[in-house]
Each structure stands twice: as structure tokens, then as C-alpha cells.
Length: 291
Length: 239
Image (cartoon, rainbow over all chains, first blue to last red; front, top):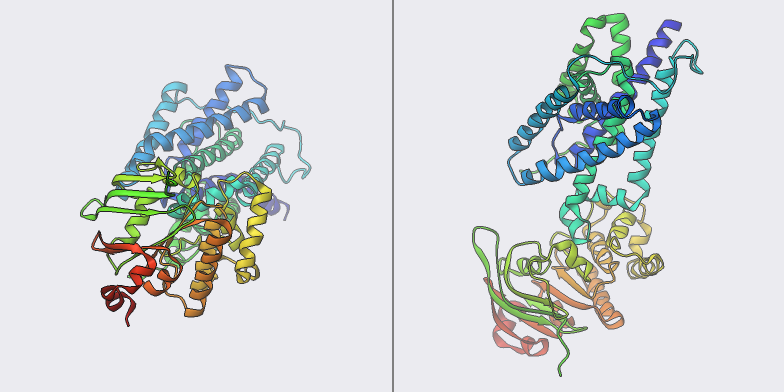
């Protein structure tokens, strides 16, 4: 029983990472109806920035943490303005092409600057036990708290601030948003910035577990995508819950059913399963259109 | 010297990329005036409003309070005090009624004034107050039109552009809405440019009218004169 509980709790810890990346995917999907395939590589790049700030600049962890978030936000905004904006009126496949290009560029640039050797990444939470004793490591406990804080902050931003309202309005109804004076283009860019910043936190929180290498996020993006689909790609709350659920399913399935080698297969099973049985996900809106 | 018109449009052309829709319109809205553009479906009424709001490419002159706004971004035209109640009402369906209203005042900084104006529009449309926490997508067509007008008024505009406010609504609601437009104009001096298929209603509140046919103005004058015109009466007023 203790072992089972341990699996569940550590599933929640990684689930938090999936939830954060899933939320980043959903945020961009809501405003553009595209899945940003490069979300994972962008997060990896951010994590390397944190690595550089820590090792080369020698900054304290939390200083590097917040600077990384700020830089990632800026990178997200710039990517949207420079690369995605010219694609605004282009056919769907052009945007997909840009996403794949972005993925390759971020992956190669990361490898080129920081090399492909696997590097350890520090945890700010020490290696002493956590309040949950043997059920969760100190890092798992700390990273769960951090992801929950980030998710709460994003929720408060969207629900209770003027800029959050404008972000939602611009995503739902760009034409009407312009008519009330919302600068829709900048809202889309800010959405990208926020998604990129959330990805950065996820990257920094997972890196101590999976170690730092340019392909670190590729599997995680797949789990996050499964989580987003499971919860409903149109629902931010659904994506977050889906992310946590996938984390737990992955851990328990890996421990008791399919073994660690086939863990990633479960993400694919979830993706295919959701798309065949309930494409809108658990909390997603069912969109019907008249033809 | 005559007072500058609130809105002055001259030689306005507009197209949607394929075909020219407007062929050189000249019209104006006086300070505190109500102007109506009449015309059948496809005459170019909606396009004219979109042109003024900078939503489509145009050629020709559009002056608001004497300054050119042709080629200005929609977001910046809004900041000058032009509120547009668009074709199809433009409701933010996923947001609550309250959030829709807050978006109407998005560019304003004066919190007290916004609170005051919110109270005022909820006074005009008590039904919105009852539904304030409801998702706007659950409102009826009439309520969404009320919401669209309220959203526009929360800008505290100098000019209100209204696209077919009577469209698809029950006659009683239409009368309410036109009464309120008259009040807004009289009490707050808001200039109004209203586009309508229902010429009777529009001529009731307008001081000036223009008749639009396939992108050209074919007749214009004081609303009272237009109402008396034989041809208009037969084809647009139906008696």
C-alpha cells in the first residue's frame, strides 16, 4: 500500500509538470487553434538559460529562476511577433510548418550552444526529506508546490485582472476585441510569452529529475499533449487536471502494468483513446458548426 | 463660422479585396446629430460603418472632429471616442454579461466614471442587471443587442455607430432600443450614425438621412424631407 501511495504521489509531482506544459499548449490553442509543437523545445532552451545563469554567471537559484522566466516571456513574445504574425492569414499548414521549424531550430540551437552532453541540473529544495517523508522526495514536493503556485497565478491573472480579461476576449473574439480597443496582436504575443514562461518553470522543475539535454522535453510534451486532450484542449482547467491525471496514470501503469520501457506508449494510448471515444475531452466544449 | 461636423466622409471607396463595394460616398454626422444611412441588403451600409472603424481598406477622406482617421487602426479609432455596435452584435459569448460591459470600458482609466456609466446603462436595460453574472451566450437576441449598445456606451463615446439595431428583434424591444438611443443623444449629446433597413424607425430619430443603393448615395437631405419623398415612401416605407 505504501508503495502504491508513493507511486501516486510521485505521479502527481510529474503530473504537475505535464499540467503546466498542457496549460501552455491550451493557451496558444485557444487563441490560434494550433498546437505549438515547439513548446517543449522552447522550455528546454529556457532551462539551458537557467543553467547558464547558474553555472556561468553564478547567480543564486531563485534569482536565476525569475530572470529565466522573464527572458522566456520575452522570447515567446518575440517568436510570435516575428515568426507567427506574418502567418496570421496563411493556410493552416503554413503555421504547422513554422511550428516544426521552430522545434528544429530551438533543438539545434540549444545543442549547438550548450552541446548535446547530458548535464545535471540543480534542485533548490535540497536532498533532505520532505514533509511527506518517504512518499515524496524533497524535490518532488517542492516542484509540486511551485507548479501549483504558477497555475494559481495564471488563474488569478486570467480571472481577476484587466489584462487577463483582454487576453480572454482577444482569444474568443478578436474582431469585437478590436472594437472595444483591445490591441489583439499584442495580446496574442503576450499569450505566447506567458506560455513560454510557464514552459520555462516546467523545464526547470523537471530537469533535476530527467537531467538536462536538448531532447529533455520531447517525451514530456507528448504526456502534456495527452493531458491536454484528456482534459479537453479547449479548457484550461481540463488541461491542468488532465496533466495531473496523466502523471498518475503514467506512474502507476509504469509500475504495475506495462513497465517503465513502455510508459510513453500510454501517452499514445490516451491520445488515441480520447480522440476516438470523446474528442472534446472531459471538460472541453463540444463545438458544432452548421454547414 | 459653422461648427465642424463630428464625422465628415468624402469620396469614400472601400473594397473587400475582390470587388469595390463603395463608390465615392459623401456624408456627415453633425455635432450631437443623428444621421441614418438607409438602403436595402447589399447596398453597402455595413461596409460603410466598417470603413469608418478602420476594419477594411479604404480610399477617400474620413474626418472625425476635423482630424483624419482614414488608415488609423481600429484600436486607435476607438480611443478617439468612436463606439461601434457591429453587425451580428459582436457579443463575447463565452464571457459573462459583466465582463462584456467591462470590456466596453477597456480603454478608460476613470474608475468612478465607469462605475457611474455602468449604473446608467443598467438603468436603461434592467434586464441586463438581472443577468449580470450569466454567460452572454445564453442571452436572447434582444438582450444581446441591449448588451452590445451598453458595451458601446461604456466607452462614453462621442460618436456611436449602430449597425441594424432592429435586426431580428421583436417590435417592442426595437421601440425600447430606439427610445434609449434618442435619450442618449438628447441627454449626453452623443452623435449617432445608424444604419437601418427599417427606414420608418430610423427616420423617426434621425435629423439627416442618406439613401444608399449599390455603394452610391442616391438621395440625401433632412430626415423630414426624405420621409415625404414619394419614391422613398413607396420603396422603403411601404405605404
